[in-house]
Length: 274
Image 1 (cartoon, rainbow, N blue to C red):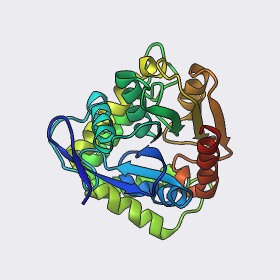
Image 2: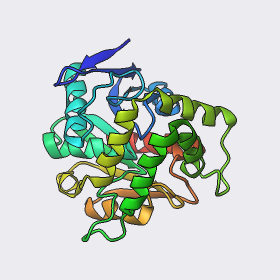
Image 3: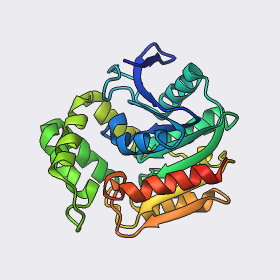
């Protein structure tokens, strides 16, 4: 397997497909690099180097007991960029992965970054705070953690409905639902729980303020997991010159439900940012 070693010695898995301008994908919770299968293949077939890793604790990466915080996640991305000696890389982050790539820029700047894509991302801040009243209530995240502790398999199975919007008119195959559950159950329970704390409590506004590269923001208008008004709308307003695409009635998991549209939008952004 293709692996690299993080700063703290944890071994992390990655895929590296194709040749050309590099595009580095950071997955959402509670998935792994396999969520990007269509995007990786699509871009690699069109002359790009498509790279995706399994976050620590997920997929084929090691499962340490600690280290599930955004500073560490950013350091892991830095270690992968150094391992592969990447320059002019476009960073793509979905959901909690949008926090990873934003915190990477906050910690390491944009010297090696050509562009940024935030897909249904938890940026600039996800949870409700005094100065972010539109954020999601703490009780929601407490309920997620309680559900995971009680019966993780059933919780993830049920979570897939609002994730893909099948409770609101979207259609995905039984295969996708089975794959989603299989991927999620590969992960460490500790990592799965700790990541809920990380993405619900981390403030990325200072990281977003450092973004000075072309940026594409895509969000579903009917995202039941990461509400557009509290995240994507605000991060677009914060990043000067960013492009915003809102997928009409799109759910959180639009990488599946709007697969072809997303692939074409990613390709157009990459081609326009040569």
